Length: 329
Ligand SMILES: O=C(O)CCC(=O)C(=O)O
Ligand SMILES: [Fe+2]
Image 1 (cartoon, rainbow, N blue to C red):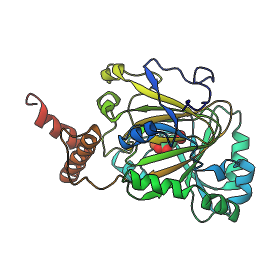
Image 2 (cartoon, rainbow, N blue to C red):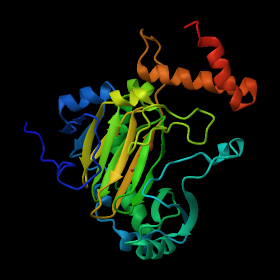
Image 3 (cartoon, rainbow, N blue to C red):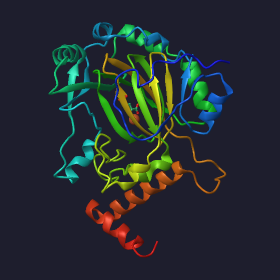
Image 4 (tube, rainbow, N blue to C red):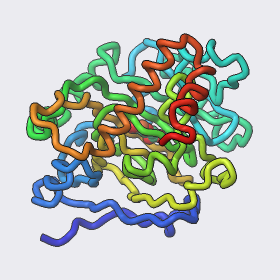
């Protein structure tokens, strides 16, 4: 079968230029054997023809404004185009930590008003990021019920994933960027409106991406500034190699658990996306060795958490790890 026609490449739609090498993420009709092979091996793939969120492809700001209901929703406000996630529960342990963005709780119509008044501004940017819940009005409930739940639950069973945890609705201003991080869940990332460029890095690139310590509010995020990498602090970033795709409406990107990703909205237009996040499956009854990079990342997280818990001070974790390793391993 011929490869399905794809959206434009990043070189054709003015997006950020990076110096590291990237390979294309394959774009395949979900019924193809190669797509199934990639998913089975927890490798990313852009799936076409899933109809997963077909019923949402008509969503735009005015439809959402009329149908989202009166509840409040989370909108992040940032002084730059970067929206780095941080865990509010960890902020108090790091007194010098500066929140990279502010969290606001707004009704949808307040968001739309703010969105319109922020168009063209270069001092402040907005990014709506909230879970779809049953507070939404009947129009959106209807669209939600008509997502391709049959298809997605068949995928969950086939790949032995755990339960669906949430569907995050992401509404981005043109040009917004989510910096590089990994999540501890599998994700069917669905593009509904506009274009997004996704750069992914395999879990074995961990040492080249220098994540913040687990106790830090920016746990799971890379410390490397991709626009001007500090090669003295992060020398292995010079060896980074990634994968790239551009998503257009109807595309579903499988982002496997522990795969790093940074996502950029095209500068041309607003973007709407919906995530389907699934927990990892149960530990297999027969473990094979050597362990995968994913399993090793899980181990490092547990070691860091255990030391933090035992020492009760995140400042003591590094020195203890050095005491164990320096001159020994
Ligand atoms: O689309 C984005 O800006 C970020 C999405 C993301 O990180 C995710 O779905 O895991
Ligand atoms: Fe993510």
